[in-house]
Image (cartoon, rainbow, N blue to C red; front, side, top):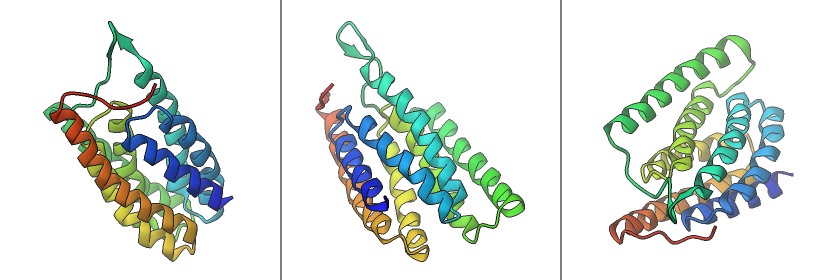
Amino acid sequence: MEFIAALFGVISVWYSRKNDILVFPTGIISVLLYVFICYEYKLYADAGLNVYYFIMSVIGWVNWTRKKSETFVFPISRCDIKEWIYGLSVFILVLIALILILTHFTDSTTIVADSVVSSSAATAMWWMARRKLESWYAWTVSNIVAIPLFFYKELYFTVGQYIVFLVLAIWGFYTWRSMIKNDKEIGTL
């Protein structure tokens, strides 16, 4: 199950990098499997994060298909100051909440790392659903912390997945930045 979840996760991020709507159905398969995997390995914040990914994937799928006069309602763009403040606020509030919840209500052995991965990914997913270039920054942070976390939990397919995610996040940033510079979007709807 972990291998299938990791495989669909990599496929999903590949489609995301390409700005292809298939990011969402492939991602949904991965995140639903990871809800169970993370819960089983006492990665409670990550299990909850995958529920959030599912919800945001549905929202993102709808957002990415919405057009107004043949123009995407959410084209690839950069965050303005308000979106930066909102994203960083989400990160900080979710981080604090997760640390408190995991400390007082679970038997988690990886409280801080699990919370950092989940809070940075929550911000990344919010920005991704709105096609914000900065989502790739947040994904990069989440991936860098996730690699040793999943290695510690001996989820080696997931470690491999997050190594690929890290490479794709960097590549995705440059791809999307190029699309903004060229004022065009490449993707399949």
